[in-house]
Length: 370
Ligand code: TYM
Image 1 (cartoon, rainbow, N blue to C red):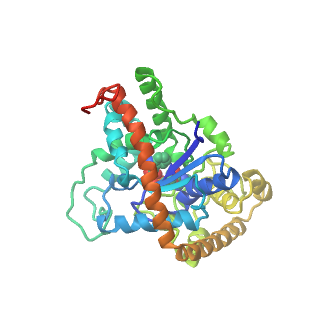
Image 2: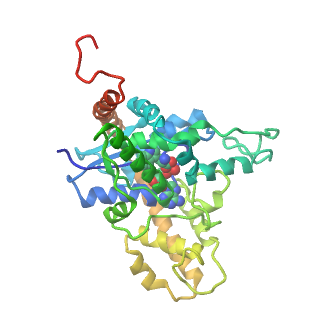
Image 3: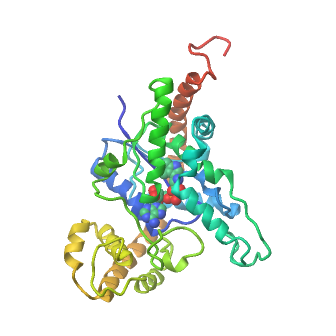
């Protein structure tokens, strides 16, 4: 029996933001530190997932490269033999398994995916306004319609392939992606019922939380509009801290974060999402538990004091990370990337072959002429 697999992926449609870092990168780095050598860790860039919405394709390859550097700068130890970094599109089995899985996924379940519904809606909200242009800003007036790609609809199936190819039981992701992991689990169980033990399904949400040592998923909200998640979308620069933001710029964003008029600090996502968001950022960046941070702040009345503390920790975090990104040894990283892509291709091809046999695309016993 090989080691259990922990796997996560982060798209490179844009630079990473603080939500990506706290929701997926930091948990992976912490898991690696906590369980060194005990698990296989796959941390990859789902580059094929990166243009389900329009992007500037001229920047994609370099963005992928930059984002990989952030993994290393964030503390992912790529010298560990059980840690693998790779790009999804360099392992063709991802695309091929996606097609097979899509024939066992239902339109109904895919239509219920919150991410699809939300993104499809963002798209239509901008239709016909001069603001609509995800890649160039405001200089493309006259565009009246932008169709929603079928890639956006089917992207959870590609994500399922990403997970099932490597038999990953543990998938640390932020709150917004939990539903897709559950979809993957349902799909794997459905396929296993039909074809026998084909896949290792990822564990359910409750177990994933336990594994991550959390009582709730990470949800970093927009600083401007705390009802919504912090996201890479272009319409919310003031609410989003991008990892390349100048530290002073990020400080300003935190100091002008939207809060509420209650006048007392509470950790309550429904009633005071802006404050809860700041408390969560503070806990994660200071590596303290949420309870510890809440015990220090809840009941106090100075929102400014809280904002200043968060601003300071964000400022220090960015300055430190940016220095580390600049010092990543590119040659070493690229060599590791290429080696890992070869190693992961072998594993992925092995899974794909089992699936091909199960669905009847390949003979059950190897035949000389095949
Ligand atoms: P993506 O690229 O949108 O986001 C990457 C990771 O960052 C987390 N995240 C957040 N966490 C907390 N608060 C936020 N505001 C926030 N915004 C983003 C996401 O939950 C995610 O963990 N489909 C995935 C990428 C993917 C993947 C996979 C993930 C493709 N294949 C296989 C895991 C396993 C996506 O679009 O994430």
